[in-house]
Image (cartoon, rainbow, N blue to C red):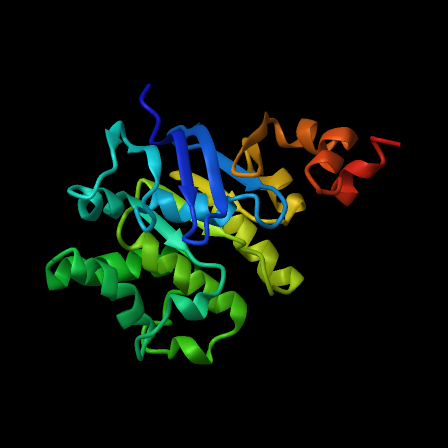
Length: 244
């Protein structure tokens, strides 16, 4: 089966010459939830931006088997839903309805289809009735769920979440985990919350210096003390009793 998203020997360097991705090769299958972890500077966010066509490097990014290039970026990008770490970077309209409607309108949905997409997305993130609220007056947890709704409204094939649990209180974090678990699309979760990865992910990639250092079952990888130390990571608290 063709992967929904795939990197093939992908390389990207920033203008100052710093290598961010150095031969990244990995793939993401239909319906699976995959975590991407690694120390700061490992290339996590760069990989996410490249998947959306927001960065152009060497090698290939394939979306549903088609190689992403300058000519098809705008079309293929529609299949990728990116939720930023900071929801304020994603929410800029006067009301929640307008924030969520922005994407579908730019895809030239009819007014009725836009309304249907907005209401369906709000229902998915359990915020029905928030249409006329101002996004900027919501709690951080609510903002994150609205940001998630803005991409769900466009019916993406791949959902990308960058540090989704940052700045959330325990209750909001639990709500978000439950919502992500309920999704039925390919989901990529990048960040440092390894406990979240243990709960959510079918598979985890550990990135180091712009390439995959290890991949596999989250519990197995995160219990490997040597591997974790080599990649400047710590064994999650819930697994420490099994490594002593």
